[in-house]
Image (cartoon, rainbow, N blue to C red; front, side):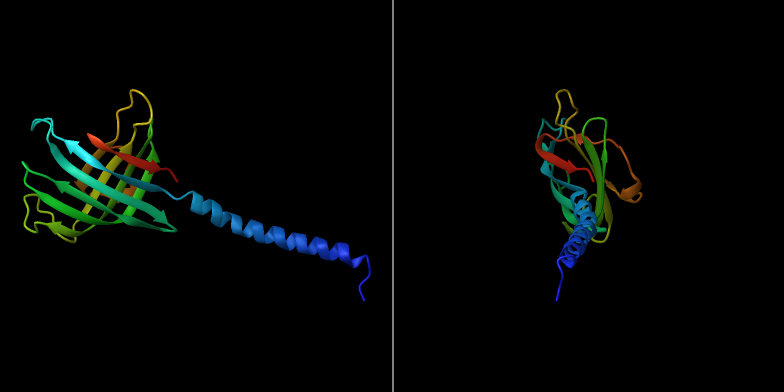
Amino acid sequence: MRTQRSRPAIRFVAMILALGIVLIGMPRLSAAAAEAQGTGGGSVNSSLVGGERMIHFAFSAHTAGSADVGSFRFTIEAPNPEVDVHVDVDCLNVFPLSVGAGAWIAGVVDRVTPESNAYLINPGDRLAFYVTDQDQQPNAPGDQLQAVREFSSCKVLGSFFGFSISQGNINLKLP
């Protein structure tokens, strides 16, 4: 038979257990909220070829736990030698810039058309893409894109240079 004195003790223990469960779950919630991500799509027009669309791109990348995942499609169009490249993203590094944010997104080429192309890009090659999200403020340089063969892990790279996108938008979320 329980006495009146033991009820407050049981309530106190239950409250401590509930608080412990909440506190244990909080690091997971804050880690999930702190994941980096980037999405975007658009085109870069050539000032050398009468403003015609030269490059078309679309990507989605995010950090899922301890892994980076996503895809990046990059197409160079006529009058340049044409190529359509699909990259399986395995590296994402989003960082602040003086205005907005920048990111390196890298991965392995899983498809390329045509297979024999002027850029010598083949399945299995590693490519890296530098993108910026800088169109939030007046007089900002605007969103940018650059594609290169991966020369270092994207996790250690910082600010670079890119070509201003002519149409579309890039959205980056800092971790």
